[in-house]
Length: 549
Ligand code: ATP
Ligand code: MG
Image (cartoon, rainbow, N blue to C red; front, side):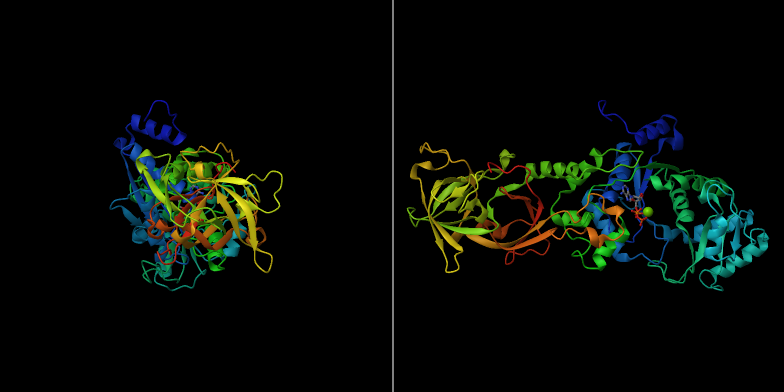
């Protein structure tokens, strides 16, 4: 690790463990998603952390699906999770595991606890159990079933497993500490009856371990040395350590860090699912979604996501990251790689009276940030489109673009002057009649004129129509997670579709992997549904500063 970068607290723990030769210096992490939704930018943080740490210390990372809850889990989610992790640039090699693969082993762990007198079958209802648990400051009440004999518990648990009881009729609990101020230690439930088929084990089981009984033990089974998770599991750690001790299994060490929270961004899978189910968005990969698939479809490069995950650092306390931090990283990345092109989103035709009917070829730099990207020639002609809002009939004082009688420079071409406005019968502007200044060609301008603005344009007979989609924040408030009713905070202008934008003709064969900068309009990326017959571009992000307004 480089000298000038200070270590975060997780790296410090790991380096100390390596110094002490703990687990023979072996480092093994895991990323443990529950396949009940698509991954989001918060998960990306966790993926980068777990895979990053392993890479840094020559270790390994497992992908483990925490699929202990049969009700919410689906194979579609498993597939999307794998695709997203690969796209982020990480590889779990052959270490793809499922908590459900350990159902037999977990069941045996439960039997082991019963045999040691440390677990019992409870006939109380969920409501009764909840009441008896009490509150942190007052000890709970012991269940009347707590002192069942080991033999009775073994029989009852076996009967639970063979389907003798209905859901909710019985649960298995640890016999732990009903007066602990840590509620997680008050005889937590470790097995419950569920007749829902599981996405992998089908109807093999009708009892399922709770998350708390499965998660830590799965880490131990896999020999995970450092089990990195988010802060809400801090209070679960004593329970996980109790299991490790009482089952005498591999001592994985849990380390908690603060989850990533981002302004204007919802990270609750439940609420993201609601957006999908209510069709408020166009699926999990809607470009407004904070999901990795949405981010990908929007055109944000995976490098930007990885850089962001590192830049936000590892915190021990909850905090909220400003959205501008993410946006700046995305812009900086795209600025380096995007091909510059001219695209007129809301076209206004300009006829240049004194220009010949022949095309003239202008040179334009593909990407000023990347000398290797070279230059190309674009046609200029008698008829061009400019952006409708680059012209004002009755200009305000701070308007420096084209006006009647005024001049403006066309990017990489000539200076033009507007002479006449041609309107249709409704009084709407149909086109502008302009003239160009002959000796003002970019690169060899001898006109001596100093227009205040440079605007973009495309030549009418050498352009192609496209659909362009602009996106804004999905929510009107910076803290959407604080609102239970998401409808009240939806930004109605988070999606604008423009159906008749005009792009340079060569965009017809635009590469679907390439990022483009539509000059003055932002960074764009082709939608997954875009074809050369029907081009659709998503705006990844606007430009912060457009050149010479
Ligand atoms: P759920 O409420 O469904 O449990 P979850 O976001 O915790 O939602 P998991 O699939 O359990 O989803 O998460 C997988 C891993 O990603 C966990 O280790 C979790 O701690 C981590 N993770 C989830 N959200 C964030 C976040 N916002 N920042 C950092 N890590 C996160
Ligand atoms: Mg979770």
